[in-house]
Image (cartoon, rainbow, N blue to C red; front, side):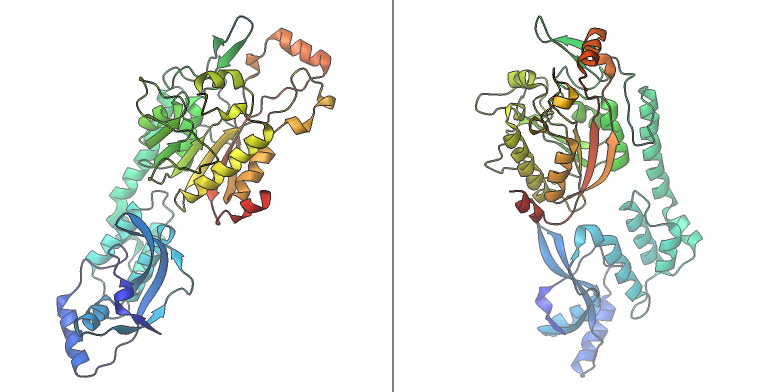
Length: 438
């Protein structure tokens, strides 16, 4: 196939050499002037290629940079090319695969890759692969060297990455939190603080006093820290759409993550919180930066409606005041909007709980029309293009209920709830399934 030379892009990241060879380009130009024929270059169409301040669709050169430059110098408008993959690839996800394919091509013909080139490729891949998905053995096979050589090239990078994970574990232990290695994160050892709402009602706030402010429904900092440990890397951007008591931003600071926080309630002692009202009608996303993780801990339906109402504004009500239909519509809108404004590799951590009509109501008489459950959230998330990868149980403590309250519940056969789930989802698809819910 012939392609327009002007439509091709030279990506410096996936180019496997330190730089172009002017000597090689000159030799190819001389060959062209006497009618020499060259094999086709190899190209790949990609999506989300970074260009200035936007992401574009581009056609990258995997093999044949010197031929391409020679053809341009000679005034050619087109050049023969073959595609590596017939379908466009997402550049954000496939950078390493593209680099390795370019390297593989340059191991076989033309100016062979030098040991210095191979070393730089190995180091670039190791640096962009903090999860160590590419082993030293796999890199050695792709680069045509022995494993010990790759070990020597990247040992310092891997050591820093291991140290980074170990530092987080050490910090968790020094904070007195420990590391949970199973999918149930119970943090009941955090002492509750009783907050008096009025003469008749009190609520209990759980969490480490060193993180966040007194706030309705404040979550344990340990829960946030564990989410960061398992699902992010140092330097990642965390997005808090309902910042509340600022637990997420405080934990991000300690664990070397960047954070953007938004909330209806802004205050002088928390300058990091930016005002934003999540209005499902206008579909506005308040940031141009694309986060690596959204940590979303919204009000659990109407559970603390009075407390949140005091923090909200008249023209920007808290979602805890919504009817069930409005509440579900809000999440349909938010999850879809989030899907459109994050990276292809982004995750969402969504913390919530079943909220049933159990207040003073026996279990047999509960009305499911007045309830919203984790199953509902899961359904809406999936329809908006988020694939649920983990469900982690983070139960509330039973200590928040007095003995008299428990006795009354038993007498009336009322089934309360202490369940709470952290749903982890990754961005997939295009979110079109959401239309089926409308």
